[in-house]
Length: 72
Image 1 (cartoon, rainbow, N blue to C red):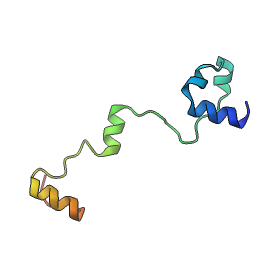
Image 2: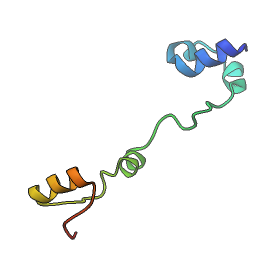
Image 3: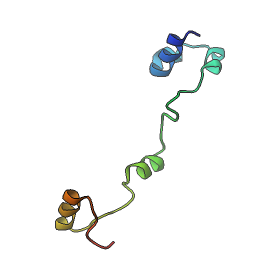
Image 4: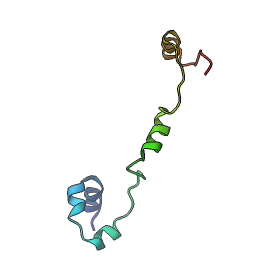
């Protein structure tokens, strides 16, 4: 496969679905790494699994100062 075909296969799911099993096996892994994240990985990466503040005034203060002000 040419470099252009490899890049197109990485970017275009429709084009990738037209490739033979041999071509898919010879396709190098994407340099960006893992493309899809599980729900647990996504929540962990986004910080949504942690509560920083619970009171509205404290939340506003935290937003403006980027520091936690209330105990958890």
